[in-house]
Length: 311
Length: 320
Image (cartoon, rainbow over all chains, first blue to last red):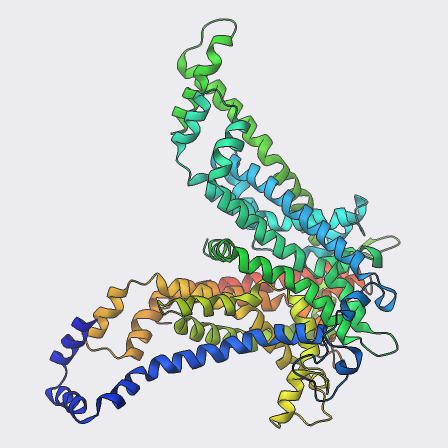
């Protein structure tokens, strides 16, 4: 860096460098230091302001979820809950005749099932497409990648009809299958690349030692591609947990709703009034697992986002 | 490489092989075929799922779109009538127009803020990493959750964001941000920016980091100003990332649904209905499945064309 600075000085007009030297001599050391630290200070100020702006909605969510009924209606709204209470959360079991906890359980089941199934299906297929090629395996890979191009929102009408034909409409099983299918391309892409990056000699050794393909996959390959598995699981988890559109269309019974869809019923409100405290408690229930998992496993999530995007 | 694997694994099956002794090559071939079969078997769940729940619906979309297809009752082949109707349908036109307006508004917002943030957090200090994680955090939150959250934030009188805007004199005390089309749109833009700009930042950051320091340093030595270096060195080298980021945000905005369904409910006066919202209403509220499918085909074509144009533009021009 110092080299760059001297080189630039050598090339610019002599007057400019003379002025720079003058500045150095006339300004007292303290002021010069203050001036030199200005960009760093400005950087900190801007970054901290942005951080506050990004965290503010989450703070408001928690604050509202913890407020009692009187404080919720206060105008102007208070910043901190003065008497924090968990009432809003306990009330979720009976809000407007809804059993939000039952819907929470639906969300958990669908998300976990979709995550496990996606990982299993993507791992098997990813291994096959990277290691155990079959005639047409390249075509299969590109066909599956092509599904990236067409969003499922555009084929939702016939998707609904296919599920109806199979008797899987208005069912959590049907929704799970839809989630698995539409998270598959991403997962498959990640798993295929993970397997392709493993040196072939490792697997050869296992096969020479008399391992079957499946055993070699389970005991030799799987531990090595674990980061890919975690990434696939995380991406599927977040996508399924947060999915709204398909759940809204494919589920019709209230007791089968997933959490995001249930919240629409809370906002539609009885007698024109919305229970905002209960709504924010419900939002907190959907948001907090994501934030916790993100904080714990952000390395895998972020690398998955980048890998998936920069294909 | 595969040949070696096949032969190596072939040799272990040899002692048990009945009949005439096989040559190493033929043995390899047999095991290779077995391996291919195992591979096919392992890929088959994925293939079945994709065919049943992606390929079949995709083909059906085109087929249904040629029919008058109510949810109950008989369907009837009507050729291209649904498409003719869609072109003339003022409701769908408004929806398409609004979707494009939303895309045109939000794409530069996301891009400029994302780029600014990427330049900001590019520093190699630990604090920069912490800030990166904070800015990226809303990306893991669902669009629906974010919409519910911001619906409350901007709610008249009781919403904290409404209160801030009221104190700043932006909205009147008895105002309602969601009552006007532009107010509602701006709230949605604010929410979506908050939720997804972290991803744009991250993609642009990884693009910036893939540009070697020597290149920008060389420009500096040659007397280029900071801005010149950015304009003539960094931006052109960043073009593949720019293309990706733009295609992402444009495709995402053309498919917008959750945020409008939850935050504006399509209102006021149906002015914030998006294309996907229109499809949802046609197919699942009015149960006109054939017409809904035709609208879907329209949307797919628009998506494909817009993405293709963007890729071409960003690949061919020399100065972006």
